[in-house]
Length: 258
Ligand SMILES: C[S@@+](CC[C@H](N)C(=O)[O-])C[C@H]1O[C@@H](n2cnc3c(N)ncnc32)[C@H](O)[C@@H]1O
Image (cartoon, rainbow, N blue to C red; front, side, top):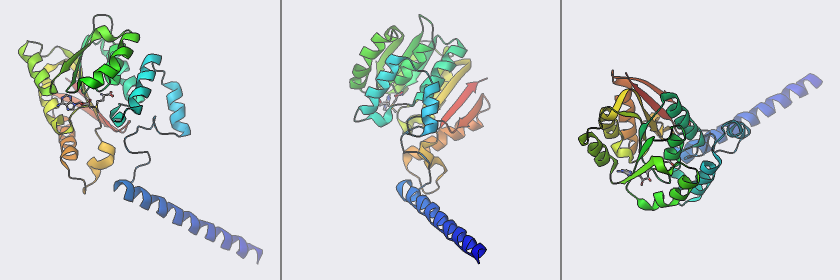
């Protein structure tokens, strides 16, 4: 009799567990039309869990850049700030490439430009593209304080125009890296034109490559999602590059030019 009570109790608990799981799934589904395990717009390292705290404790960021990241996140457009892991990766990649010239397509307050500049020696150049000067004005005092301002050249116009100007000026095939994080609808064109800027061995790094999961959701068919699907398709099928698509932050795609 006692055994049946235990079995009954366990069965009851299991039902509660299944119910709770179904409930969480439904809430996740309703919120974003897809089930994701972190807040939309935030990377794992920006979400508040013990694992992300652990990751953050081991991703040592320059203290001035950490301050800039906090200021950026608090801005009304703060959701655009790239993640800590992405910043660390950009610094690591620039260091590894011995980068001397890179292009940041989508500057905002400059967390990505600052991260790339940190991985470059004196004399390195970050061509930083944006269409809004207010954002650069927020970031500049931090770039100065962190000793990277000399490396960051801001170009205030659509990034595709800046890329064309660089190509017209004979700077084709001289760039070590391009970070793509601006106007989503132009993502495929940034890749197509950006390939002409890159030297052999150079890299294109694409932020928001998973677009909070929307790329895998057949019901999501807006222009931004389709543009990101298109750049992922282009990069994965292009024989001139080695490509990897990763579930880091909001998704990162990296193409290395052969
Ligand atoms: C996601 S934010 C960039 C975030 C930044 N990379 C970081 O690390 O925090 C995108 C930026 O692209 C800029 N932008 C939008 N359209 C653009 C365009 N056509 N050309 C250049 N920049 C553009 C926006 O003004 C915005 O500052």
